[in-house]
Length: 443
View 1 (cartoon, one colour):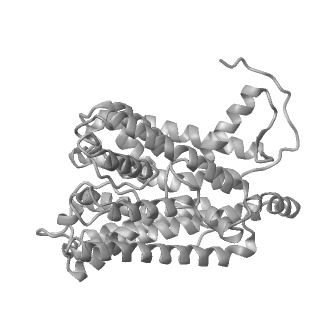
View 2: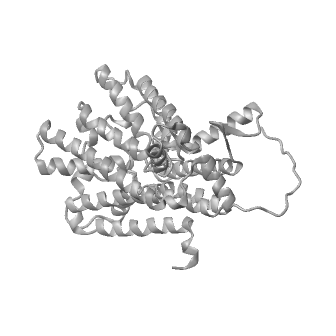
């Protein structure tokens, strides 16, 4: 392999492109499509990209358009995308640490309790163990419920349970039912395991690693883990409350349900905004206020080195700490007795600005390529870029050019945040001199 391609910031996107190409080829085979002939290139490419990037946006009905072979291909892509992203993100973070000087690396490990280079094998084993155990438990729960309560034959119950367990844990949002999870809108036993799988997969391996290592000693957890957990504890209730507030009386969404079910479905939507992609109510019928809050939360996403998309919770919290420190006139951003380094702050600012720029440009291009409303276009672009998979229902109606735009956004959103953050860290260097300082006017 050429030396240039060994750089992790280039290797990860290349690996994703190769797997997308393979998935597209398999989905174009006649055996993968339920109808006559193979799937058109754009449909196969869109589906393969959405599956590997664990997004869940679809341009055709997954349940009826694809055969059992096609469903298996989609499921394998989802699993590879989820496991590969988790492993790659964790390993790349270690590679970044490896590039630091020994004294700096040891200090960072001692102060932040970061993953050490010697833990690579342990982390990969943990990723595999968590994925297998969590998906098996969720699959068993769903399969038993489908068989014993909903009367599905054992083979269908086992397959559907496994498919949705893998899709939920990997935050993919694909379903073998045309109605998706809305088919079980009145069954909490079907909804709660899916919610749990999305939360667990989207938390991120560094957090799970920390908690497993010191389950009853929060003081030993890294700053990353603490920021992720605090950010989750703040954002999830915010999405839940906003959905209840703006959809409580909407007869097209929560208004037709009894109060207990309204609370459950609002919570389900709040969890799915992390990057889950499932829905139990018609997202296209939600109010503008709910879609606005949903768009913001989707862009933030879930935990780093997990299966969720977005700019990540830690990036968002670091930005809040930076703003708070600036408002207070303090020189450092501090949380839990730790100072956030200026390099990390600059990386967070870069990731956020690039994400906002991509969303703005993507929305403008989609409005130019298709006749859609601004709110639908922005929601669709954010859902694709943040690899969420929720949609107001316009995905299948977009022209091929619009669908290809979403393909690019899904790829960039899934691989770009990892690549950009790693490239920024690996390119860090010290200049032998500094220019004179001058203060331009701000605001």
